[in-house]
Image (cartoon, rainbow over all chains, first blue to last red):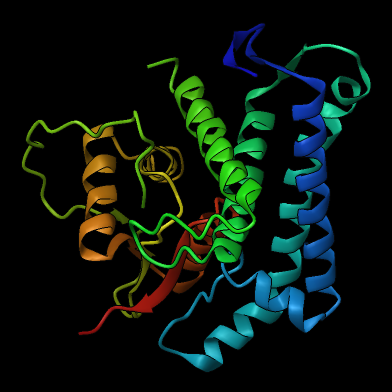
Length: 164
Length: 107
């Protein structure tokens, strides 16, 4: 992968087909988890607690009301952020060599959000609970993915900040 | 929050900042509420700081100070105003994957 650079009013990065496939797979898993959470699956609900946190920490009644009003919309928007990422990568995944991906600023922000959500879920699986936790690296690929996604997110922040 | 391995935070002293928050105008009779962002072990410092600038329109120094407050104290107040406005901020923070909640301002 080559990081995001300003391009044509938006940004452009270069991905290998295998990188595109990994991100598509992760994005689709995230969408599935969000859909299951919306469907009331308790296991998915538990996995989503870091992605859709409690909006009222000291008022159970208000927290429940807020959930009823906002949860569906939030899940749908988060699913759309993941879709921006996976849709853009399809052609690269199907190609036979590294290829550029161009995104608008809005799409870049969708990417940041989808990658942030993936990191929250991976962190949960790795057992990262407090600052400084490295995670159990179990399975080892999960730790590598977690760090790679951090790199991409940091890269997007840099690009959106005008390459500082 | 976490730093990227090579994304060292600047060690330069921050300018003195008062406790300014984004204040939404409201009627005197309305009970004020606040938007609190909580520390988490996952989101990158660079990202949190960027979100604060982008969403709350904070300047760079203030955003950095708020981000460090979240990191060091476990939480920071990002806005005060009526409840509806605070819920909108919290929903936006959740879209960005940050842990935010609405709180009544104690009098």
